Image (cartoon, rainbow, N blue to C red; front, side, top):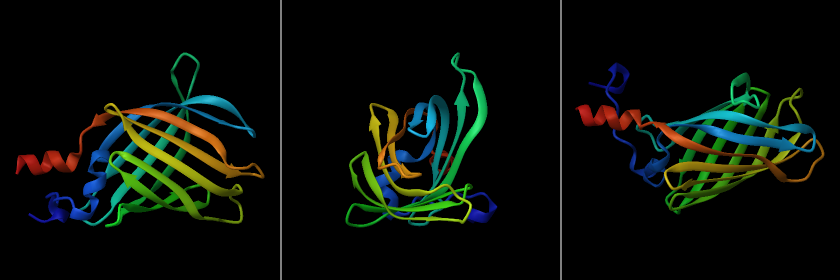
Length: 178
């Protein structure tokens, strides 16, 4: 059976350094910036593949009330993570608010550090000029921190979260059933 008809391809060898990310992750974090009020948020991140030499990435967030109940949707981003043979990483992330970021970084075991090389925005998008992201496993959890330079502010902490794996790599499950 081919991929279009339900068969899941084997992961491309190039994504081997990032396979620890495959699956769905959920958790909570804190958002803050000088131009906004600090708040708690929930997040779901998904990493998948289609047999090509990149990961498919998506993240969606929602605000959390003080009692932990889910509030309104907050943020969404999608992209592609492209590991390179020299343990570097190229990442493209697009936001529905009119911003696209290109990151370059390094992979060191289960730690990923990256910084923007370019931020492109539409005429109506918020002024974002730089970003820096750190992802890594803390025990079995995926933790990350995101620093941002935007709306005249220098690069500084913006988001951080800790997420638990809630879905295994669906591609691995499909391969196991074959």
